[in-house]
Image 1: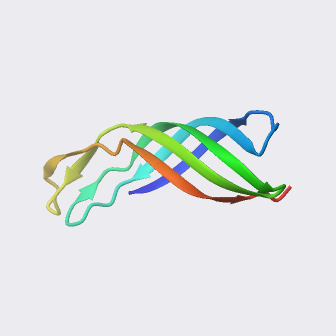
Image 2 (image 1 turned 60 degrees about the vertical axis):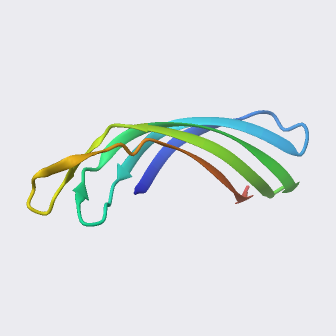
Amino acid sequence: MTNLSIGAQYRLPERQRFIPYFGAGMDVLINDLPHNSANTVLGLHIASGLDYMLQRQVALNAEIKGIEAFSADVKNFDGSKAGQFDPSNVSFTVGARFFFN
């Protein structure tokens, strides 16, 4: 599954090295299943995360994101419907951020 996502974030005011944030947006979920084809569907997401500032332009990051999406029809190669696939999910990521401001 490939997720094209656009959204907005609200970052709480910086007082310490830890900066929490919240976000929401819209997703286009391009589903690619082995041996079958599935429709591309739309979804919405909400996210919450925390940045730990190492320097002014470098942060360690942890985020949890939930996506609610429409179900996609799964079709065999002959075009007959094989079932449905629900691409809704919750994910947790850890990484680094670099700010170019």
